[in-house]
Length: 225
Image 1 (cartoon, rainbow, N blue to C red):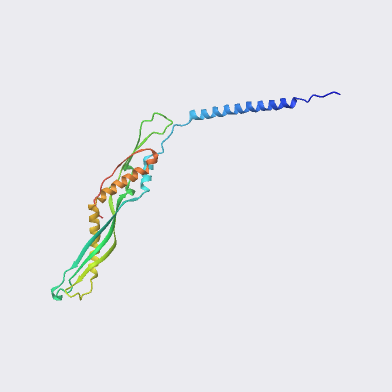
Image 2: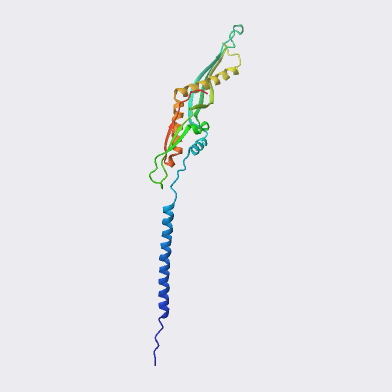
């Protein structure tokens, strides 16, 4: 009986296919690396996205920056002199407790290109964006509004015998005086400086992610409505 030997040709073919696959893979990798480094060496230098117009636009988006809300409690008196021919029965005097707020800040809508300067440090590496320096000059801080949140009657006297009705003008006078007193106390609390300082910090925070150096020059405005 004759024993036949199994053919070995398929193994050779399989080995040849594997070798060919390896060669093709290596060549593809070489081509990829060559293209990658060619593009890397010929890429354009990095350009900073910071510009003066862009800075102005970002600041103006914040519009009126209400940086300080100053709360005040105060006691107010209001009175009306009596007339002799009414035997002073129309004399009135009221004592009121008022609570109010003052909103102060910086109107960033007034910012123009003249208020912003953008410069860049000398660039040593063309592939790295230059470091930006931003200088902003803010408009003066201002009082936006004075609110009278609440006013309560503590005492109200009318004439000698209290027979005259309360005069609405006394309450109106008290409200006017209360708003003036709320503003006065807020001014004494240095609200305008606080408004400028807070606006300065918020503007700096607006560009903190850019890595730029930000200098903000603020002016303290007059404390009046």
